[in-house]
Image (cartoon, one colour):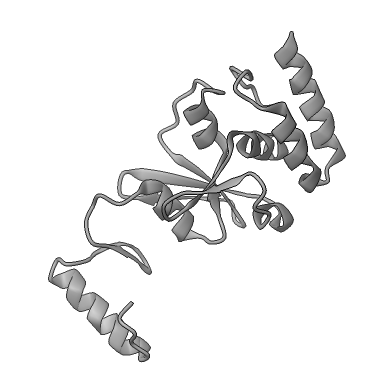
Length: 167
């Protein structure tokens, strides 16, 4: 950040700015200038690579109606992390899927799954998930992205959900 090559000097400088109130330590290694930080950006910075997905995207898109007071993130680890009043739930997803950018949108300073990608991620992690409203889903996008998962049981589940959406 300051072009400091000496790690110890950088730590001293960070401590100084935190004590002076010019930086806020959110979590080990993560700092912000004020408390108005983007919670999605923070979620993807705690563990990288990662992207916002699962129920967070599904609820935002109207596919599920349940309210979750947490942010769901696809990552290489499974755990929950509490930062301030926010809970971040990280779900482990296979590396070949995690690092594939098909269906991932780049926002300001974070990555977020498209509705179709979040739908696939959710089924991949939880086979018998209940969705309230499948009408917003673009099935052609689902089929395009699904090929990268290379999972026959996921393909069968998608066909079953597609059949449910037309009934």
